[in-house]
Image (cartoon, rainbow, N blue to C red; front, side, top):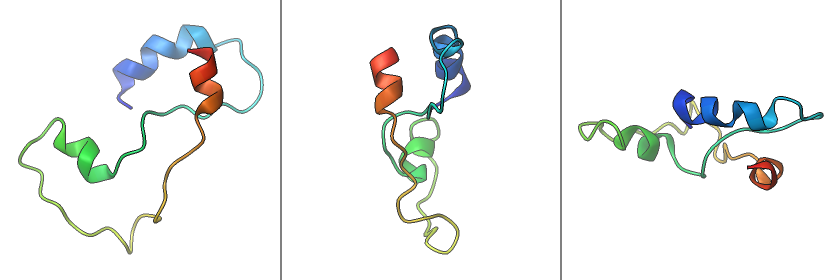
Length: 64
């Protein structure tokens, strides 16, 4: 999720209580980067990134 997208939902989540994961759809870092830079080259990040970096955003989806 880009900061512009996050800025649009801040007013809706500002007064919510508890833990709220904020993010976009599940995608790899490569897919995310490729959207804005078609020259990005695919590399292995197995040693750097966890195999499943997704988070549960179901609570966020109910709010927005």
